Amino acid sequence: MGSPLPPPMSRDASHTRGFRRAHWSRREFLRNSANSALGLTGIALLPGCDDATAPVAPAAPGGPPEVRRYSTLGRSGVRIPDISFGGWGLDGDERLVRHALERGISHFDTAGGYAEGRSERTLGRALAGDRPRVTLATKVVAKADATRDAIMGALESSLRRLGTDYVDVYFNHAVNDIARIRNPEWLEFVALAKRQGKIRASGMSGHSGRLTECVDAAIDDDHTDVFLLAHNYANEPGFWGSAQRFKDRFTGGFDFVAYQPELPRLMRRAREADLGVMVMKTRRGARYNDLSDHVVPGGSEAQAAFRWVLSNSDVHGLVVTMDKPEVIDEYLGASGARTASLADTERLVAYEARNSGWLCQPGCAACTDACPASVDVAGTLRTRMYAQDYGRPEIARTEYAALGAPAAACLGCRSSACVGACPAGIDIPRLARRTHRALG
Image (cartoon, rainbow, N blue to C red):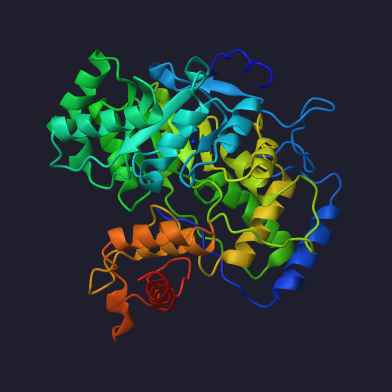
């Protein structure tokens, strides 16, 4: 099964994005920016960078990629690798889980609703006999009116599917309402489940429009041990400072706008309170592109995106969906990173140039009040991402149905209230209609 996991090591910062095209063709932009960057020698390093051509962190000579750094999620005591296995799309592939374990991935994240419980069952079978070597996190959507008994019932169902008597972190999932984390029944459940040894730590996950105020409230209340937050380079001030300098020197025609600037502050606040900080949605759409005409050193777009979030000292680690052994190996090329390079910035700027017309930033919510029919625009575009970018239309249809197929209202809508509401310039009416036709 491979060598044992390395021993644990001691543990040691609104709205994003949006740049719009001006005069160049996409191919001209990519070619010119690549040629310019490759010609830079002796350039002053950009903020957050240490080596303008830093290569992918290599594995041991002749060996496979592997986890190169572990840390502890604050006061919870839960130890995780810097890149963890996300089980969102996991449905029966036990060999994939074993491959991750053999590469040193020791933390596995899932939810009771992922693949209608099959994700948890797959992890339970694949990790049978290895429970002491791994940490597990799962989730429940505990609403503001959920009862302690109902939440406990959901946890016990997850434990049966996972084949274990405890999980290391139990998240209240996709929180977008302060009342959910202040529900007295949730707090009583957490205290009881800890006493009974069924959970080691309580958590809050979130990626919706009220994320920042919910995180602030959870830190104030001090009942949450671990956060799992939607975060990527688009929320990093250092990236936009670097990208702006890159623009000034090479691209001239893009306008960069930072979204959700409060999130780095909140992650710093959580870390200072000795709470765990994990991040998701780190690839910002996960849309694969052919960037062969944009040749830069430093590896893939995914590795560049991971290095950006891992260079933030307030992030303990990231969770990302893994669906193939070669994807696991690619992702682990970024493990151990503590800095991002100019090459990373350039690759991510190129990714934005390819995808800026449809990337909806988690937690932005600038469009929330623009729709007269109260369509959940962010939720609708998230399901579009699942179908088109993640390549999982079956999950997208289920998630879209759970939203109540809100974009049906867009088909006959004659209002233009949402036009221009997106700071990224996304054509909301067009994408909402297309999403409903594909998934409704």
